[in-house]
Length: 475
Image (cartoon, rainbow, N blue to C red):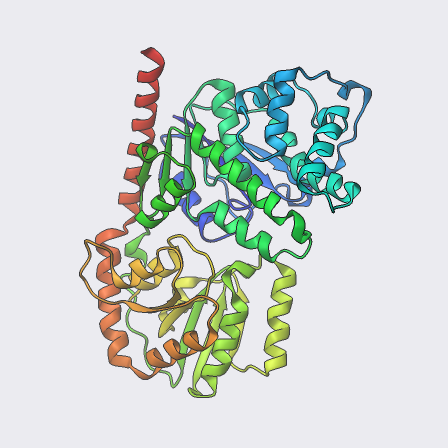
């Protein structure tokens, strides 16, 4: 089977999370061929892979979003849009429900340039109508440039050369989901969407906090990502998620329930289950295995540990992982200096297993997660966790509807440093509790979250989707 994986901002450019999951799936399936269709931000990222590519990766196609900013209109970009095409383009700008077949036909089959619309009188007239009706107090020039910056990347992506595959599988909605839908349309093949987090909700949170988006345009940006999620869900033959609650959110966002399937993450349990309890060394060692990124809310973790340190003087915090955002990493270091925080180290990408051997318990302070592999690995290693109540974390620590094994950690509200500090203090002071939680966590992962089960479920999913698609084509 030739599988085109559409990946946005993750594998193979960064480590951890979705990237780890993707690498595990590819390496575990030598019987398949993989085509990677990668979306990255900047051309300077070209070829900067953090993983050695397995031999079953037969093609790599990189798309850099910043290239869209350098497009210039030429005489060849002149194009006369029909009334029906103008209708769908207006629906696109309004972030409603455009006919994606029409848009795919214009930009991918007919090879109309992205600038043909954005520099046309048609686009200008659509914006004049919208601005007059919906933004009467916004300067038109500001409105024009804001809307143009929103839709330039979309039209740019629609013009991409599409690699051939038997199935197109995106790891998100958004831009990645759009390319997967385009690939499925271009070669009349099935499409799968897998969400580890709910992409639309994550973008919504980022947009509401973004300083570079004027407040009057934030809702339009949010609507755009909701529109892209509708495109991905509508065009997909199957939509998978990591646990039941996310499946319900997908339905709320417009996914049809009959398309859904839950496939849990899985890890190589045998790599962690032989780790012995930590030998006492006079310190309580707390480890966070995270990417250094705002969504992981490292600042709240630093503040919470600073508060904890006033009560537990022999506590130490180890923050492990790659730095995705250099500016945010500097802000974290500056916060540590301001607080005068002691016994915090950020060694970068290291051997996690070796650190877990010297860890008493782990902590995760994220404001958004799916089903974090770091928590699964911690539990498999017999290390209880303190996590925020995001994604599947509560289910991992307390068990789901069919799991009565017990409690494997403490869940606290996100962005609540005092609650995080209190939970860490509890585990610092209760070694017996840590031991009991360690046994529960290890049993939970051994029972429900094994790597081989995950791989089998995804392969069955591919086979089912192809069989259903072939049946629909022949009927």
